[in-house]
Length: 141
Image (cartoon, rainbow, N blue to C red):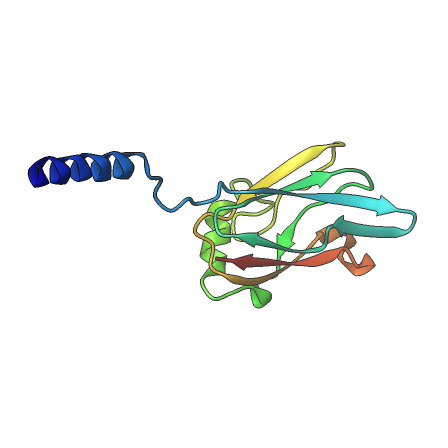
């Protein structure tokens, strides 16, 4: 009898283990940032936000173009410049962490933050930087 009980418990334990889910990792999120003009104001909406390593940021050109997104190399985490140079597939110039100019309504520029160093990244729109079109993107684990 003890033997059958032991066998039954072993089968039950194996069955539970087979259907148990390992630690669930959330799917990467997509964060949409609108690039807009409202009257005389040019801005990113939202301007300041947090992403997690692996998330994707979509910069959407709504109106008031041309716009781009450019990161300030003096205000990004250590090791972030090589990451941005790889993550930004198309750039305004080969040695700048800057997207090309976006001139069409609803044009989208995506950056995948998989493997990004954590920390704060200051960014801006080159044509409208003097008008305050800037923000801070924070990458968290």
